[in-house]
Length: 495
Image (cartoon, rainbow, N blue to C red; front, side, top):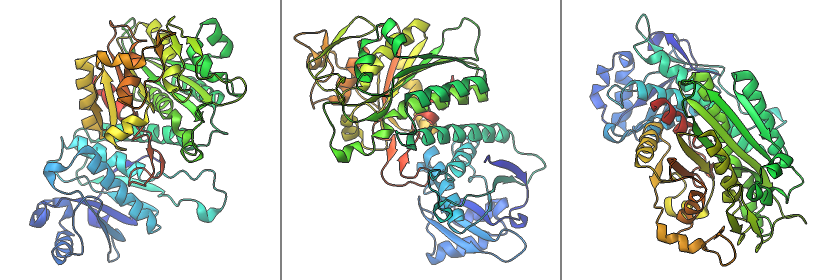
């Protein structure tokens, strides 16, 4: 379902619920919001009585007299000076979830208060949040009582004869963004017996056919011919054959170098022979979050007709411990010719990315960005709501940080200290695939850096923390978040 724009007065809107976002700073100035005039006195009384505090993640449902919306759902935004894109997104999502909890079928959303972000950005954030508030992964539940009751229609209302400048473009972008995030979440949340490398490859083919992209799928024999020994080392332990997926989108000038997006897609990670504990293995269907994000972004870029050239590369495989699995102590030769001593088979993400990064350079990209649930060390360093950013380009770093700020998907820079390369120095090969516990996120980045030419700007985004929610948030329930989709789309739109 898309969110639509509708001309209507708030108090005359025939809907099950009207969602209103309120700032702590509003107070008596609610009367200055013309669209809220019919309800300003009611809202102020609820705030003054203490029934409702307009703080983030707070809400209140009020039942109204017949003749307009049946319910008024108030959602807090906190203070204006600390209100960010993600604050607005989460508030709108909370409002939609409150509507769903009350079995509402149709809902309307008022635009966010004036003065937030650029206005249009705040509107887009609210639209994205409202749509993501609809999301729950319940496609595998068979009992009707277990299915989520979703809204049948959702609109953003305006009182003028036509929407203010920029509104339609913002809502269109929000619809595409939310669909892309939903696609990524569905791929991530589906279990590994339903989503494996061949399924991701077929998904890419479908995207290419429907959106006019070029798809190239490399199988195991192709990988052998290309001497992708690092990728094959991981893939050989599974009965499910690995795939390397390449999608190309031509939206920019012909001949202009593309931006390469590379996404790790371990569709299930047992740890290989360096076996994970049963507890930590349960959620490892989400180890393909980077790849899911790249596929979703490639489709969204085509739908938005972004004026850029892109190549998306997704190395996809399981990491399993059967009799053919690679072993600690093995030495593998990567596509680049560099040799790798395997210390841990559970450091498999960097192994498949090594060959994917080498492949990406064949497209002579202007820059490379990879997304990967790479290290638990990054989660320890930055927690579960922020990705680590390692890059060889100050310009790329600034652009990605700006996109993070604008999209509400946080990144934080981590170093790539050259002297830390000592941690992955091998006695028998060019490098080891693991350097132990210390500086784990940086070491993972340094490993990948060895497979990218110094002449190509490169950024590595370690999304191990924010890729999955273990606790539900208004705009993302428990499970796959689709982190990176909004970040990359905002980055691409900014270009």
